[in-house]
Length: 529
Image 1 (cartoon, rainbow, N blue to C red):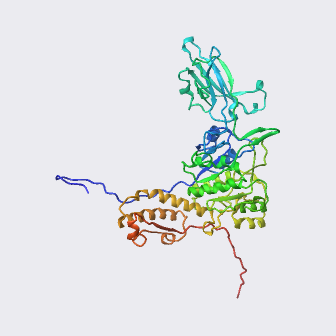
Image 2 (image 1 turned 135 degrees about the horizontal axis):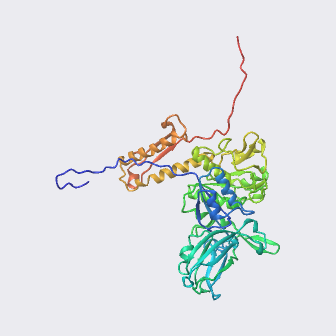
Image 3 (image 1 turned 135 degrees about the vertical axis):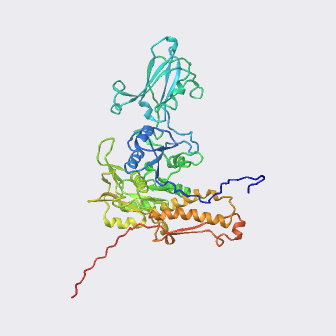
């Protein structure tokens, strides 16, 4: 209470106790996989496909991250985080990655090493970078030079060095040896420079201006395979995708960011990786995992894959924080033009869920002919019959079907949970939305006096939020009383609870379940006189 020590008019602000609850986002995707370029072990926010290409490069053979992100945006996805991974010698050490930078060293006028040029990120993509140095016209003592960055054209990739063609992608003019790092590092998409003391002090630059020259960067390594007799052998392990919480790489690079729908397309068909991803989402309690089965398997094989039986012996999938979609999808391959290129379904599914969240709401299942239609595909890898679907749907395998009049559609909306309460994806995700929204908006309650006035304020705030959710069609009931309740009173907060410093808030909601089976009963009507 304020003190009033002298006569006068005192104006005071009094809190109304109204703390509106704003719903959290639900449509942010997250992808972990192999990219051509870009930062490794970092979650990067990607708002569109153009930005993905600029940061992480284009499609690469035999890996699906770029395809998944491309399909995500084609299906109407809003934004996503992308994590590039590689092989780590020690997964708990983020610096132990096998990927290497492409690099070369500029020479000065005395042919001494002066500036180290590196690609902006690790990988063999950097071997396509050409750097040209030109001295600027003018007095010799100006000691300024221009640095031009060129990138090998796609059509030149398989050409011998003398026939390669390059596009100019960046140009930095009027550089000096003193400001070259400040003007290039962090500003160039393609390179970074270092004047001296590179390679842990093994070499020391002359500190002199470089002469006119052209260099092509070399020795980049993607960190995903090693040369073996007769070909290449992948060094990638499950741990490289799952990552480590202390090193914050792999999936755990997503720890600091808000995400909702997760996929690991480059680990498709790896049951152990899928189980780890289910656990990751379940431990976070704010996101949902979309799993990919192996390519080109039969309905009976995908049942084994889901249940951990037959050729896929292991623990069965059993989580309300994830779902499994089957079969793989066919797209027009952007690399070869082949119209029947198989890709895992997760990218398209995550994009569809994100789009439906935006236009309909998290309570709506991303399935069916209007909301489950896949725009980005030309077909499915395997036609699933009605009889086969009857076996897959009850155990939580969401089938993607192709219908003559409707095209390719997601035709399932179930989690892989054995708990009937969490059978449907939209129910699980609705509760994630409600729980996180109420949790974040109730932080102000901590340390407030635990009295009936606080109880009333909590009831008003949560009721106002749930009323909005009910009006959006997410809750069942013709009246708010049928749809939800909020209880904070002396009955669930007796003296012993209050003495323990606790406040119990009881919330009950009636979610709307999808009309999975539509039964139309038709009978003959007999006319009587």
